Length: 178
Image (cartoon, rainbow, N blue to C red; front, side, top):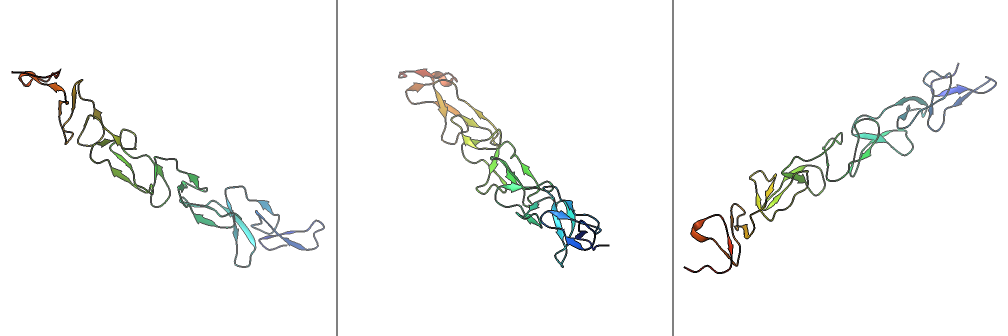
């Protein structure tokens, strides 16, 4: 009988080591270790098993060990996958998630940060608002025709060249004379 990591040769006179992405758990026959699983290599170099990588990791090029996902990749189990923008990758690299409305990814896409100033987000990417932004930066409401947001973006006011007669909400085009 052969040792784990080996298999008998064709005429069963000697043991031959498993190579590449094959393994032998009991020394009977070298079996393929299907991607994305990795071959378990014993300290002796014998290929003795085939295992899935844990979440947050994927196989190295030779598929002989699990390595942490890098860059903009993550893994729920077994294989590192790209995390498309504008999603973010959690610190343990096990999830690729969208930011909530009112947020966007930070520069390295590792966490969501709130929109600031006159920006808002409905789907995870902050954009400029030429109207009024709600306090949670989740929506942008346009001002009425002839109006523009005040300097803080909290209220609409008559834009240049327009006037408000008797403090009504309607703005009129032209000069206002008393």
